[in-house]
Length: 199
Image 1 (tube, rainbow, N blue to C red):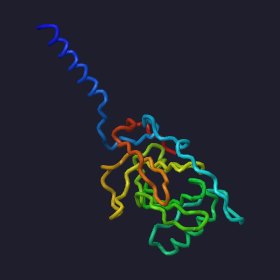
Image 2 (image 1 turned 135 degrees about the horizontal axis):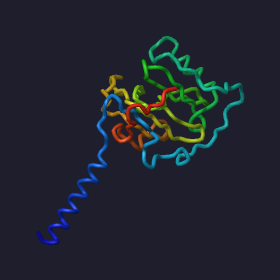
Image 3 (image 1 turned 180 degrees about the vertical axis):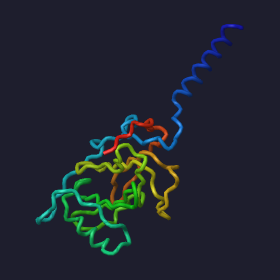
């Protein structure tokens, strides 16, 4: 065997080993989404939001409590009530969560200046049953970045997709809607069995 052929075979073997090492783990029931495993994630500081002056008046300091579901009696009234809380997202907005079932979070974004909740939120809800530490939503007042971890519900039907789109979604508030700027599939941020943190 000549040196060139041996070199080519050696290079092919090394490349094959590198591909096998880089392949994501199989996704099973014991695969928990761990956003800490995302390589070079978008950072809150990369998407700053200025604090906005609000009308004078009392503001509740604590985060809003979970609400009833959309369509339930009093839901719109509850959204307006949520606007009375101090902004907790993107300078002048309140992320108002509700339960959409066991290990599922839905949310609206309420403009604390107007009480309106017409900002598009990408998904009606996100299943968090396979999310490490159940941190389905992460956001800050001084940033337009909102991070969602889990399996989203279909925007049309509200049904879960069986985990096919599960992972970490990095979204940014642009104008009146959230825009997905990066998606990392569950298979690439999988924690091994037994490593999930429970509250």
